[in-house]
Length: 236
Image (cartoon, rainbow, N blue to C red; front, side):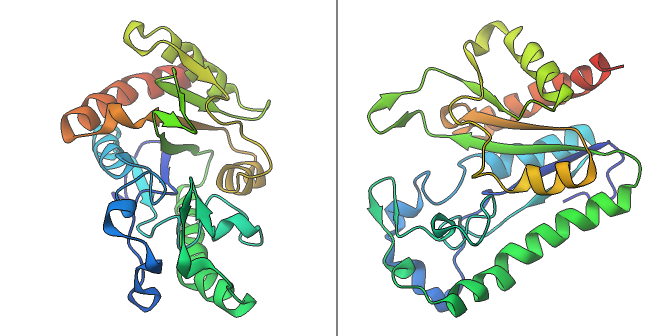
């Protein structure tokens, strides 16, 4: 979306969609389960589209479900095509052969990451990666208190600046520092594209109740369109 955007930010949505290629016959997962967070990052498609417009930034969004193949995982990892997700069996992922997995890499994973690389190449200079994710308010019986989270390794000045900016927003408290997830060996997108090019980045997790409808998505897009340039300016 908006590939000619002039902003330095390259917005990414690893789990923005929940389509399943027709030959996979829905992976044997019900429509109700496909509405859940196990299939996609709820609200990220709308958030990214609105933020792209507000910032005049490109947004590269994966339209296929993370249950087909998780584009924020090394495809060699078993959980890239999970057999169970948050207690829900995924019958279409049971007993996959190496050829089955390779087909998903070639059809879904590789084109997405090639599109990201093409946008970074087209910009030249030092673009900034903004990875957008959302998280379910309750997981494994635990009510997550955070409204936003900033995920990072110890190498991202922009992440630190954005964490400070978010923590100054009175209606967002608490904001998690590497919560509700840590950026670690399971993440693929930011390490691959940002570290591989020496680029700064920020990976944002937004609680899904904030993005439950277009009104919420617009409000959070307006917030991030205000804070991201300020955080970048904080770095001089």
